[in-house]
Amino acid sequence: MGKRQVPVIALTGYLGAGKTTVLNHLLQTPGARIGVVVNDFGTINIDAALVRGQVDEPASIAGGCLCCMPDAGGLDDALGRLTNPRLRLDAVLVEASGVAEPAALAGIIRTCDAATARPGGLIDVVDAAAYLGTVDDDGPMPPVRFAAASLVVINEVDRLPPGTRASTIARITARVRERNPGVCIVETDRGRLDPALVLDVADTADPADELPLAGWARHVHETVHHEHADAVTVPVRAPVDAGRLADLLDDPPEGVYRLKGRVLVRTANGPRGRVLDLVGRQAHVTTDRVADGAGALVAIGMHLDTLAVRTRLEQAVSPATGLPATGTIRRLSRYR
Ligand SMILES: Nc1nc2c(ncn2[C@@H]2O[C@H](COP(=O)(O)OP(=O)(O)OP(=O)(O)O)[C@@H](O)[C@H]2O)c(=O)[nH]1
View 1 (cartoon, helix red, strand yellow):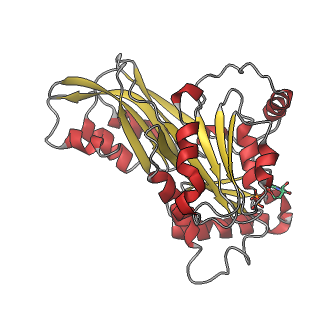
View 2: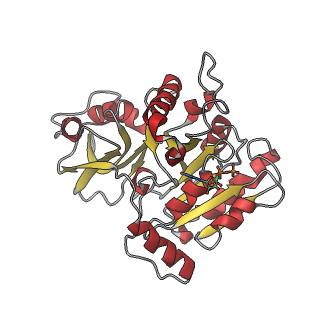
């Protein structure tokens, strides 16, 4: 397999929206090895204390907001350390302070110096009960923050009065979509979203757990309900056409939030292995040195039209015939 890069996922949201709650929920994913960077605006990092004991590799940046601090408060160094292959982490989550600007944070992660890190999407958390009237003043345009998000979590839905719950969620959804029509949106209480939307766990077996608290937290996680994401898997047995694959990454099927896979691509010099990873609209394609020919594509999202998604995936990976058209291999290489 090509050089392994660890996805770095930003977690933003207005003050009190539920970022730490979402983070704690994700940390309980069975078998997941997650590194965390927590940024508190105050000088004492309270949020870091809240996740301590559950996290495999913590780093904390206190005393200001990441996107306003010189050198982003040392985020580059922290990401370089946390994405070191020796740690074998599945993902690194960066919890921003409540005042961080999502677009600025996404930019910092995108331009991070660490060669072992790659952007893994931006999750923006919304407090359903407080959103209208605080984050959103109902002006002509919804908050710009949603433009940078790949996944919006409408959290704290349990706090909405039952009589107006559906209409409030519909209103928030419409405002988010006005800014970002293609973004994936999930509703949660206590931040309980399906971790499959956010990260892959390399080793599904529970790790040797020296921390009793983490083991307990994982047990609780297994017994609580959360709405499950849909997944569609398509095996890929023959080399595929680079152009059709690039079309799929440029325009993924409706509702698909993540798309990942290993395929052989037909080139003028014979089949070449590629690993694909798409989060939101951001795609990465790397070289697959193992390239043993047994590939697959997996699409994940909420409430997918699984038949339509399967049809699109099958079309995209139908066996390539003849040589690739000029420029198609280069189209795939754009997604580095
Ligand atoms: N009722 C209810 N309370 C929630 C939910 N999610 C979070 N909370 C509570 O809301 C408060 C704020 O949640 P946090 O996860 O700390 O929010 P945050 O975005 O990290 O907050 P800051 O870091 O201060 O910006 C905490 O008391 C949580 O227990 C939810 O879905 N329902």
